[in-house]
Amino acid sequence: MVHPDDPAVPSTKHPAPCSLCARPAVTFIRYSGAHLCRQHFIEFVKRKVTREVRRQVRLPETAVIAVAVSGGKDSVAALRILHDIFGPRRGTRLVAITVDEGIRGYRPPSLRIVAQNCRQIGVEHHVVSFKDHFGMTMDSTKARWGQSTPCTYCGVLRRHSMNRKARELGADVLATGLNLDDTAQSVLMNICRGDVERLARLGPHEKVQQGLIPRIQPLRQVTDKEAFLYATLMGYPVHHSVCPYAGGAMRNRFRDIVLELERASPGTRYCILNSYDAMREAIEEKYPPAKLAGCTSCGEPSVDGLCEACRLVQALKKGQGARGEGNDGRRRPLTRAP
Ligand code: SF4
Ligand SMILES: [Zn+2]
Ligand SMILES: [Zn+2]
Image (tube, rainbow, N blue to C red; front, top):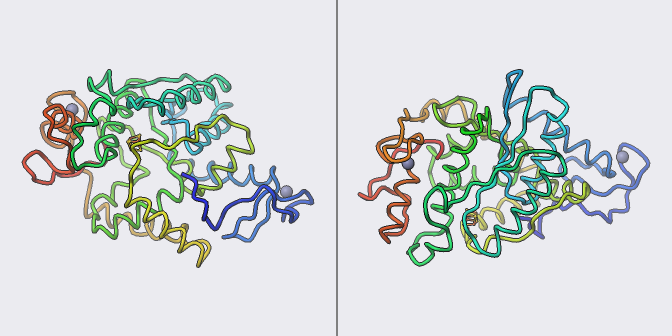
């Protein structure tokens, strides 16, 4: 979500000339001190994404890249830039996947926007719905959420649906629209909660676990505002609405904290990311990915017995609400996905 107080807000009305040519700048990149015109800003973002994708993954000659596209600015920018990078490459196929959680008034218009983007660039669009996968929707289970925040299990079910579809499509990797702000917030949030194990699983995923499609994050070095400006300047159709169930009080608090730090010291988001990358190997060594088997109900990867998604769906259907723990109240060993 775009935050109005972001100190790195690129302004399309900035009067200064571009630092690289004589054209008028459309933005000022505060953390680097550069004014950039439309063309140089677009090149700047594309260069960051290209470098990051190359760093994160080495694709085989023939590859399928699945892209999780919700229709928001980040996932649309990720899809379109990946198409620019890999479109001309023979042997690489891009497919877009959207999860339909069954949220009236919110998801249907975004599905149309994703379909529109896919039509414009000739990319297959697949929709996976909670209704088909789990026999329920977010709207239909509303009364049974109890004290849990909807995102607690919507997130689990979304990852489950996405992984399953990406695997069915033969994807080598699954790209998400996670940007720099999202990552910096997640790193800080998990540190403050003392959840080092979750920190080890933030991705991008370099080790392949059976049944899990490794996730890559093309926008990992792109800020929230840069993604917004990129999508706007390129004129891409984007869905701007916010999910009516998005509570995320904790996430919002960390969004504010990260922006405050960035305001006081431009470049802080990159420092958080770089610190995380420097610690990552050590954390992953201490918390290696769990051994996975097939879920006894759906066959998706699971640590023991039922996968997390099946446990949550069962609990919801019994009207028990969802918690971040097993039904026995014991915290389950964490896998890095579904
Ligand atoms: S904001 Fe939460 S409830 Fe809404 S789609 Fe995202 S994860 Fe689901
Ligand atoms: Zn320029
Ligand atoms: Zn399952």
